[in-house]
Image 1 (cartoon, rainbow, N blue to C red):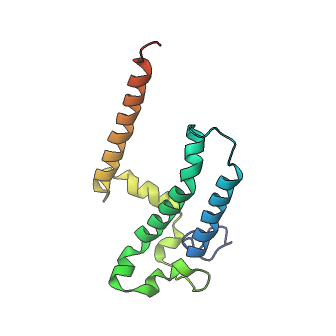
Image 2 (tube, helix red, strand yellow; image 1 turned 180 degrees about the vertical axis):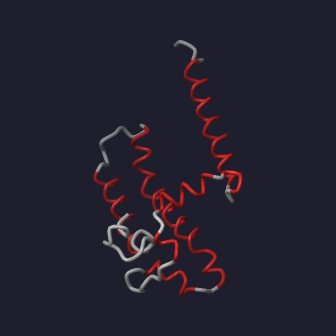
Image 3 (cartoon, rainbow, N blue to C red; image 1 turned 60 degrees about the vertical axis):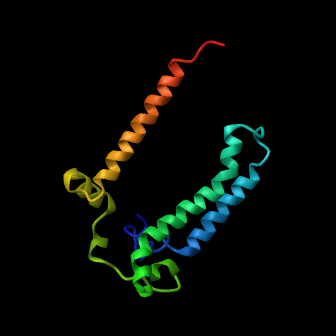
Length: 144
């Protein structure tokens, strides 16, 4: 969205930079440290507070690697230069003029041709299965 408002030159520049990764990861770690002691040791919020910085960093890095692994494996480091934005300029692609919500609409309009339809179907099955499991355990608890 910042690229469409012309704040950024390219949509894949800021959030796909290792510098943004470092700043965001440090911010998540800092917040997790600041809220230490608010919850009892074995509560869910405290367990989430402990693992959130690492989970965030792993998720962020895996996203960056997912966007660049083909370039990196091929040795085409110049194509992955957006990782070092703003040190290196980022080239524009023809799809940059198409808003991301339009691209998503086009992709999901024809689910039969979606390249990851098996993954999407698996995610739906897992989500529904987890929901049914939670519902089942909540409604069939034995009274204490």
